[in-house]
Image: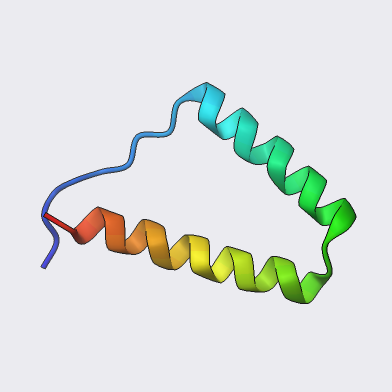
Length: 51
């Protein structure tokens, strides 16, 4: 059951995330990136349904 909480990304947060992803794409393997993105999606999903 969803709680109605939403994650609101500021422009600054999105820009920082983009810079971080750019850096990681240059320095991490595809496998490492895949694991990170799965964990990030999982964490965001849990955050959105936690009360």
